Image (cartoon, rainbow over all chains, first blue to last red; front, side, top):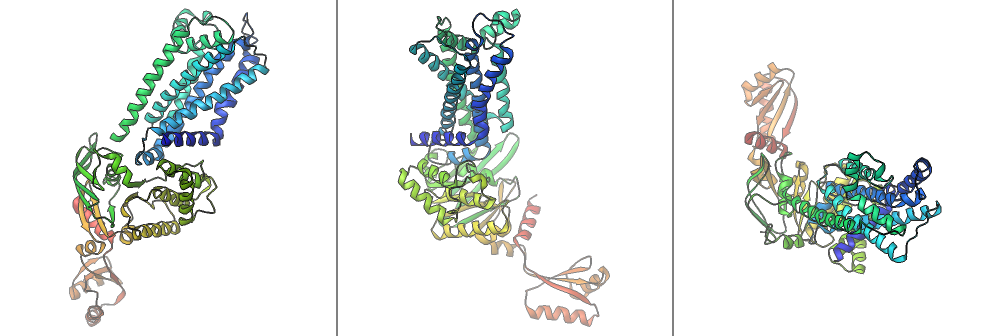
Length: 247
Length: 302
């Protein structure tokens, strides 16, 4: 337990001191949101205010940045021999990953807070009750947790920090193929089929419904996807980590 | 025996790294594992420190089996890997406190132990600076300090001075010598013969995944022959004329003559050459170095 807490403290301290990470986690999502609201927003016709529509999408986009940083930090530890040092000590080496994952969730929480704050300044007017806020944030946290474990696993297998950063490419691309920025109804039918059935869409739809005070019709689906992803990603990361000893 | 291995094997795909390694290390000694790149040095250390699972054979470290009782092994050892595994964005003190906490020290004891080690490794002035600003030597020292937080019985050092400047190298060597005095057993790998010569009680030469020599530095040096005289002449022709007088092996203008290293023998050789009217330009006595041992051993084994 002390080991995990110490590792969490380490990862949080390291992320706080890494300027690139802070920028990637907080400044970039905020800039992306400004870009979407002020640059693209005017061209995207919508019955509701675009900022109200886009906030959940930006929040999910943030998680992609967060996950990328996590994968890169894990790879860095594996390559630099830090993981070896921990694995040669009488602690569970796995707590290194726990540290990174918890720090990742914390970074994302901060980013979410920053995005929501800036969105409010830009005219975001959520119509959510306190309970809905809790549910929305809880779902996002679960999704982030799942994604962070996925990223940790990715970080263990990646050969270099650069290849770990490739994860970012997918993580940043996939949200665009969802209802994050435009309703899927506007997409060609083949693409709509993909967008409607990928895991990010129900998460975004649920968060959006919760924040705008509508009925969250895809709530269970979002929960299922996130929970399922968490179980699979955690199992995968654990399995990969245990295989390091074969190297 | 603090380390005992029997028939240790390890392959990576088609590459065999260790083919039946047998090793024994007595407690309190310094063992240097010497060998060219790819000889299996790092793999050996990784297996003994429980980082890598062997394919076959057994290894006991501090009385525990590395595969079945990995956790007990880890409690008794420390490892300093080939690359300084320190957190760049933490200060030296933070790195040390972190390790102490991970080793189960309570918070105040962790801080005390960190301060003690910072002082011992001459890092007090830089203690609260981020490691990013440290020189290579300071990093290595911090790395070593981090391995000593829990006072291990056995310390594994994988190429502890690779890439260091001569001054830092000496500092690390002094630190290792101090540890030996405290009774810590040291198991190190190195590519530097000078390092093995200076630090180790016993040297094991590894080549192609097996032991090709095992002994003290002196024993190994004697195994490749005694002292010889290297005589340099004006021309190869002179050298071969000299060979007819005093024997030895000519190589260009140089003639190598086996010797017992005594002044009397040198006198006799020079007198004989003077008598034969062959002019000697230079004389050098050559005692075998570990380099010679290394070259001859790895050449034979290859």
